[in-house]
Image 1 (cartoon, rainbow, N blue to C red):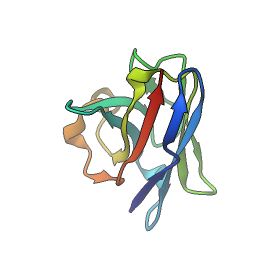
Image 2 (image 1 turned 90 degrees about the vertical axis):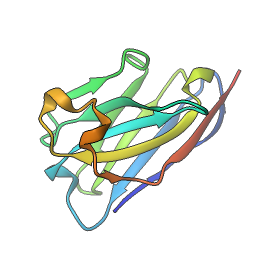
Image 3 (image 1 turned 135 degrees about the vertical axis):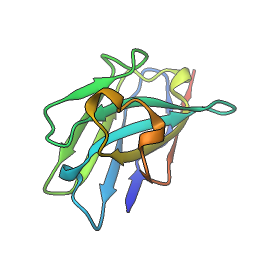
Length: 123
């Protein structure tokens, strides 16, 4: 089970840190990604970390502002979001996959999802 948390309402330019806590399995066995879904839009891939933690990838829209990390002792993945913009407003989901790294941006390969946490950025 994945439990996402940490969302909230912030002003543009501020920061938030999302958490994705896993129970019943080790996150070190999976690549972990964050997706987001803005109102009226589809779910978009944001970032991913490989199972061994050695590879990370980011959507162009968040590169340089968002950072994914993992605390293995806590079995939790984090998404540090800095310099937030109104267009970052969305429900953020964490998810796990075992797909090869070259396909981690594809939503279809993720079967285990957290419940989502709302991030709202005001201008």
